[in-house]
Figure: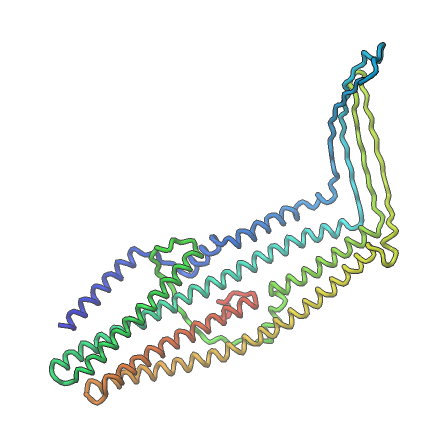
Length: 431
């Protein structure tokens, strides 16, 4: 009777699973990345910065475009205390003026300011691409973490099925007087423990899935099926070769090189704008009447030769000196970052090799646990092994399967970390 009931239960679960698949949304890793990029507010903010910097970089002429201003004024005057008679009293007391002015300032530091505007656009674009890559790594980790949780649920569901099967056999054996009531109670306890473990894992999976769906902009009540598997192959990497090929391509290293270039341009801009002569050109046209018509056109050209920046100890002299110091500090920061990156790549390469050894050990442990459970179950059927030993063997089998899942997930995460450090596609390392 129990076997028939269990068969009906599992048949119903299978039908519910089929119905669930028909009503569910299936997403792959590519779908996750597309949705994650599309709904990332951080990426949208970075894209605004890129667009703004690109707009300035495409309009460098603005740095030498003259300042143009227009003026429009009206005046009224009258005598307050004196009573003037004659022609002066009949003159128009309202006057106005209209004018247009143009002012152009030129100095030798303008070309370096233009270069820094272009460099700012390149830096913003690099930051955007780096942020996109890092988000892709996080989303990929989250996706495969949920895959591991899903597979763990399958392991626990299989364990529950084995516990139910053991209880069914023990009830039949108890009814025939072949086992004691204690053995039957132990198998029931084992079933409840398996059910509790599955229920707890399901709750964790649901919570993690809900948080993940928020990142993707999907309603949390949406039933999701993950299309993917954790497929691990051994990756052999040469740390020194990776350092030589990819160190200079790291976004942080590129960013520091750009920062040094920016500081050098800023130093030259400051040097030439403060020490080199500058030219100021201005022109102004004014109209002060129509009847009779009266206008005036004026212009000026001024050459300014700075003197105080050449005197040691003055404020502007110190500004140029401090700019040079900033460049030296940026170069030291670059050297420190390169040393740290080299150490990080070597460490990750070594950890990856050690992690593969853990996978091999986990696979051997799983094989041993599966065989142990088979032999223990056979001995239990023959009456030579107690129920507790069978339950222990089943629990060891569960632990071995979970250990292998975690080892493979850890190995994959390490590959993702290496790809993030090297700024390359993680799939290229798997080939």
